[in-house]
View 1 (spheres, each protein chain N blue to C red):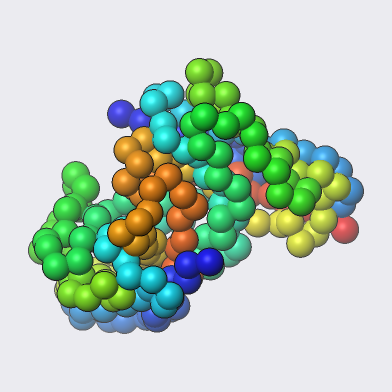
View 2 (spheres, rainbow over the protein chains, first blue to last red):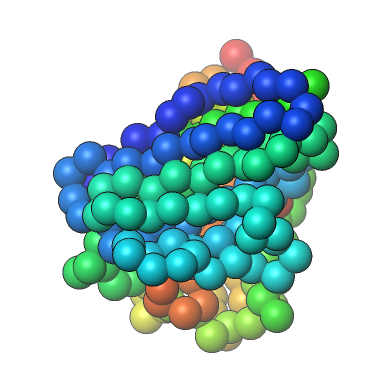
Length: 117
Length: 112
């Protein structure tokens, strides 16, 4: 089955720093990657959709200048939380699909727990 | 706007019990519904996917049903085990693009 690798699994940083999270598809070419955020005891909420080689599409209420997404290759998408603040502390997780995907199971990365002090 | 609700939010049962988790969605125009398992601080593991044309899917001790017209799905877990303790999430794909709308999950505890 499709494997999606996400790193790091946990990050603790000081307020004002930037944090980069990587999401890699290991055995398929991911033409589209999705980034979700999950606050404690809440559901996963889609933040943005990134297509290889083009700008990401952000969901309403998600600041594109705050959460920079780069999907420069068919196997790697990165999410950078710029100038992180305590309210950005959350669980971030990605999923990916390939060119032939349609109405199938989705595979997710293992997630990144971000804690901003 | 699609909304997905899961009831109950938390459930505690003794080992060996059969149990049912519920998921409802407001817009019946979906392509599929997927059930996931999430362990604390971990990613998601896909358990079952039911396409809109299907009524149920089974995998081992798990059985998921879908009633699209009424906007409901259930996940049935037979002979529960302590290892089943986790949060169970249901999610719907309304656009066949891979974008999922999740419920808030049911946290299950199975006591030995």
